[in-house]
Image 1 (tube, one colour):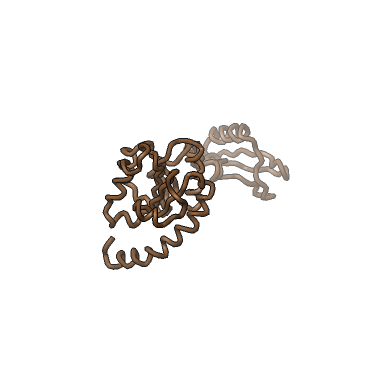
Image 2 (spheres, rainbow, N blue to C red):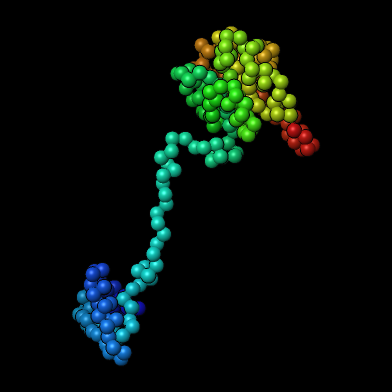
Length: 227
């Protein structure tokens, strides 16, 4: 393998075409024969014997292909690709500007958001994902929250699962941050839809209180082998 001049130690600055031509000439040498060329740097003769290779390690080893970046073009990550240690939030809200406000506020406090277009989809998602937060618009299934199938589902959920979900109700009938009304609705937080722009502030106030009240209790249950 000859890649540098033995006299001046400079790399042989040959083009690929020149390397190919020279290699062919060297390969055609009979055993015991030699071929000499002048070094492009010092002009001293460089001798090649039959069987000499002009390829260096970089020429012989093919580098791996660059990484496929097609995944970066996807508009959203699939559920299975989401980080397990990032809390998830499920939002049941009509697709409008208000929903965008809710999404931004929920994401701002650290949740990853998934939308459900109907009750069936929401319940199906909850079968496979442990959501830390659930947001329901009170008119999502009609004008009467008490007739909401999803709200009945949340109210009837076993506490072994329910206590780990921060349940938020949003609608025109609620008084924002009115804990007594939230308690009556089996929710953790109620927000009047007129106050949606203050949802982020309400979350930053309510979530720490929720964690302070229930965090130690849930830790004790976990340490005792219960949920």
